[in-house]
Length: 346
Image 1 (cartoon, one colour):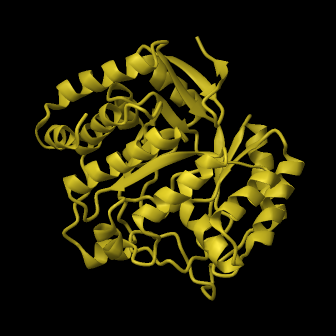
Image 2 (cartoon, rainbow, N blue to C red):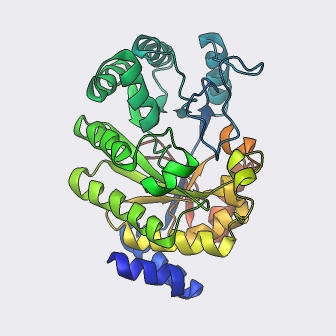
Image 3 (cartoon, rainbow, N blue to C red):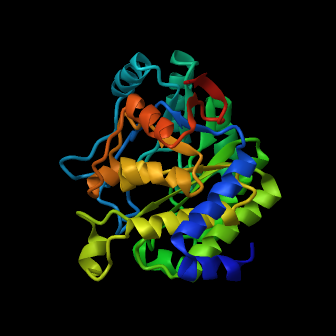
């Protein structure tokens, strides 16, 4: 699909027709009629961050009264709770802490990997990795190599927002440029570390910026094949500086979410999995996303602190995920980080 065609479909495509097109593409890629999800927990090891993104309500500065860095014991307690419900993955990320260097992260990853070898560590966004390299005075490749050696399995796509520097310069001026985000993932893929790609829309971007974002993901995927999945969600504005500065920003509609999701499924023909964002859209639009190209319902999300700080308050148990998947005539399955099926349900 060309960028011009993607732009036309975003602006003019009939919503029901987009759903049918995206479903046909999904079935071509996943003919078994299985919808997956993962049992995991987000662990935000710190909320201390110097990047000050205007769209974020989670971060704190080092001297704030509620700033924290979790101890290894506190992290272990969270992991123990996850294991009790059959969890297989931790999504591990924090703020961009101004003082934590590579040795701290190595100790952390090694501790978890040694104590809980059955868990997959899916952690550290491109901006975290880039800053660990800077503050430790080593290369991004060395950061990735050293953390991978200690047990880091894959990296999430957080920090992408919109891959347009014109937008990033307003909503997160201290954040890495779009090409740097792409290059961190390129380096990870070249070292055999898989990752996911993300997009947060609904701030100040244009439709053209969204299509360019899709294109940057598709081009890197053509080059490396390292993205396992694409996940997109809408900006959650409550308690954020961005909404105070730009009160004209509108909450994104369900129509808009499904429209963009369908075009993403059609455009990103080389990315195998598209994840539904029920955390920001709610369970029923999350379910509807399965009819607009998504083949994965994401995570049971035992803990989520970032978008919930900005007003997203949805939760979902494993049993509800299974019911929503069955309700649209597909077979539910629990997967691992690598999208391998662990347990199938009738």
